[in-house]
Length: 327
Image 1: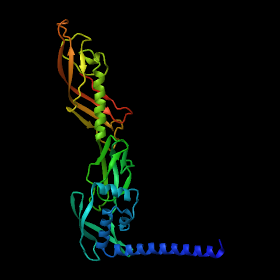
Image 2: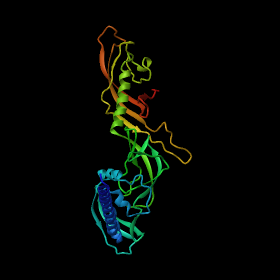
Image 3: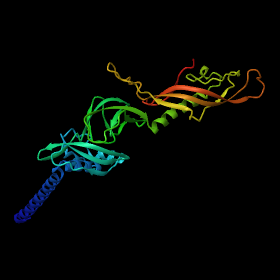
Image 4: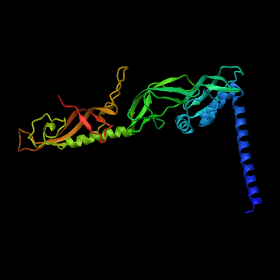
């Protein structure tokens, strides 16, 4: 290829690059002029950006600029999937106001709040548009926030709206003790507790069912006498070795309660309690046996109710039910 042709191609490439850069600069300047002329513009731009899950646009009108780990389009999309922002109305308080009244719908809730604004360079910005959140306590195994690992004592910044606390263990979901801010807000603390997810409920039921099935192998009226850890008893006179237990299938009488250890200033929660589910309630066995008073007579078939009490540690590699000893 001739030197003249190379020169022409390089010149065209440089021209195209210059056009792209100038266009981007003009768009950026135009956008900046549009967003910060007045306090009303700053608030409207901010709320519109949140509604459209545009974190970069929202951050252009947030002052000061905080750590952006959770101030992303991905996090905003998760928030909007749970609670969309719509019906935005912003008052015009004039060009010297320090707050702007805004009304909008966040999911099913109607929000009516004053939003603080401040001078920022030659324009305006929203105060506390990214809410500072100090994570005070996390009473949940392997805690996450919007899918990212966090720990107690961390400080994060979040846009207002739903907060998706969870766990790397799918048996648990998280929720905060206090409601999340619905708009720009001064710094807050977060106290997160665990709840059983549908997967966790199924895991507890599976562990209980496995225990009952194992205990059904007993052939005695006092199941613990030949199968360790079992607590069902038939309070009737039966020939040893003649009892045939059929494990309960209906577990609807059981209640599952996830332990929530309470931290204090002097101690931290016992990690062994995190993820432990207490189980209590009634189950009904079907049982057949030969009565001791009539060893050669017909077998007796009946049902026997048991109040089952114990726990399941869902953080174990293979969760199992441990029954409390009968006293």
